[in-house]
Length: 224
Image: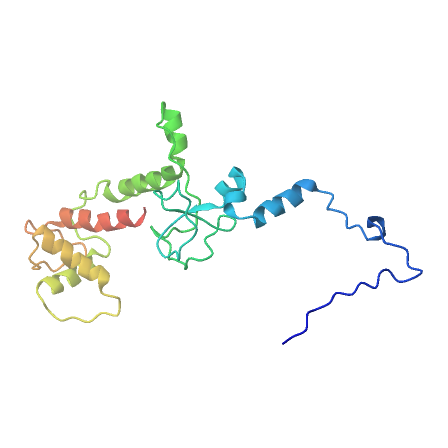
């Protein structure tokens, strides 16, 4: 059986004056009282926060979130609270939508009300349009005026005839241009029987104007 505990009071040591509250060190509060109040509100539970602070810390709940505190009135909207508006508990999710090139997307301009306003809004498209129209004029103007074999028609027309007749030939140049001549002859109805001698006059069974127009169209399409 344990003996009862006895409390002994020896009193204040002799020669020691009793201490008062003025003898202890005073710790001053920060000068910015607003900062101290904001820090105190951040450390308080959610139901002790002010309305502005609670609204700032409320974020939408999305897929991948591991949960959070749901308030009673926001339960239907699937809202959760988080630190400084950041969902630190959710996993990183890939960005949705189309990947952009990084350029700032400008809003579409208002509809033009005059010709000058239309030109100013589409000024960047004006030089390509002018160059394309000029290339049409330089390629199609009087394209069927000469009825004889001119310039490289003597070579490329003959190579196109070889393709249409499926005859083997050898040439040191790349074949794409000659294949396009053969395609133009095939679409125009050419049978590949013409010899394409330099300066020779075209016969009636050679649709040379249609073939020239198709080949010039490839040159025009290169400009824009």
